[in-house]
Amino acid sequence: MISLSTIERFLRHTGMAATRFGREAVRDPRLVHDMRRGRELTDRTRRRVEHFMNKFQERAQ
Image 1: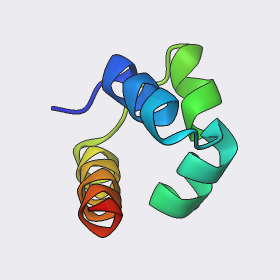
Image 2: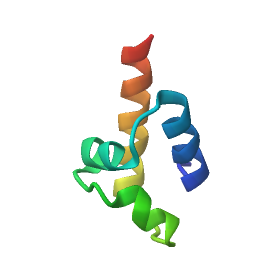
Image 3: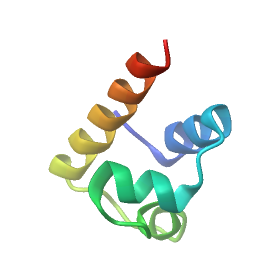
């Protein structure tokens, strides 16, 4: 399950900007900002974010 803390950890680990993360993961540069303000993700968006993070990690190895 993807949570804001998981995304924040990913951002710190990769050095990626929050806007870039949102844009590349789900085409929404405000995703992380909105989550910090309480936005809840739909199941579909959660799966897309998780898929993006997994693929990014695979490419980094």
